[in-house]
Image 1 (cartoon, one colour):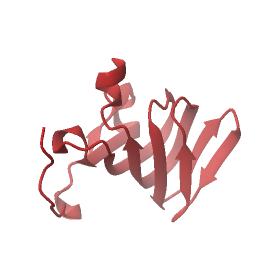
Image 2 (image 1 turned 45 degrees about the vertical axis):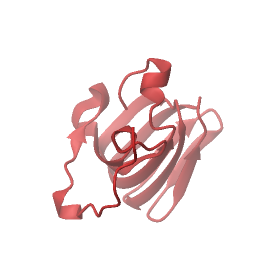
Image 3 (image 1 turned 30 degrees about the vertical axis):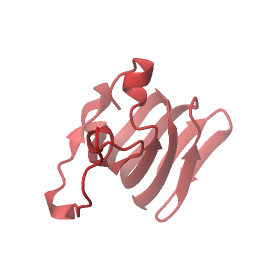
Image 4 (image 1 turned 90 degrees about the horizontal axis):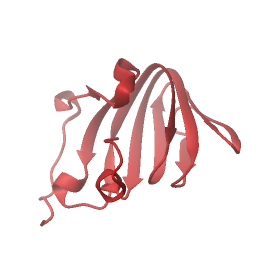
Length: 121
């Protein structure tokens, strides 16, 4: 697959959709990924009254834009507020928690679900 062309994604036109089985707790608006022929996946996420477990199947960086996010890990609670980032290496078991937060995320590889037979992120 060839890579998509450069583009601007306007904030007002982003489409946030529920992710996982956690419904409205986690919504995402992807910006790039496998559909673009990219190894990098990135997008925005909204966490609302969220508390759910997950195993990170990819390297991930989370940038908190609004609110506060706590990621519980075996290394302790990773707490981040606006303009703070959280690094999560592949294989990390986590619990994501937030009352009302807006994040930007970047993951690699974007095709982790296909390559591992995992569920959609």
